[in-house]
Image (cartoon, rainbow, N blue to C red; front, side, top):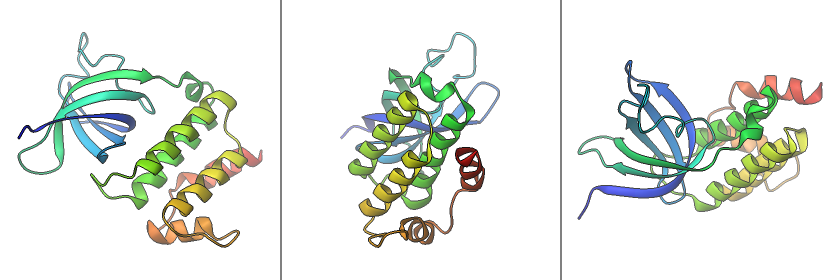
Length: 180
């Protein structure tokens, strides 16, 4: 049995670990949320240069940790950069809200392929069309439906909040910007 895994994934978060390395949190189709260490990724000339950034979709390979859930990233090959998410701050804010909602209501390494597909569609839509209230509400309703809550009109976001012990703090700023 090998301890090397492969998957398609979306970068949800990148956190500095050391001067040369970072922790990358991925949302993957087959494994759910996966956390990896990208050793040397912050070094100039790294094989990861230009391959790890928020909301990139990539084929990734990692080696499972012997203990714990922080694995070693071996390869990342970008499939989709989603440049449109970087054109306006509100686009990146809405994309960040999508990933924050998923982080709040899913478990580490618990795959949910339908939610993976929802995130892909949502990010692609915002990258192409820009952030708007309709896209945010649709994502919330679909996320609630996939979790079996929010069946009554208008209650989806409240029931999602209950699942994840609250809403991401960025939601208020997002609402203000989308109403402006």
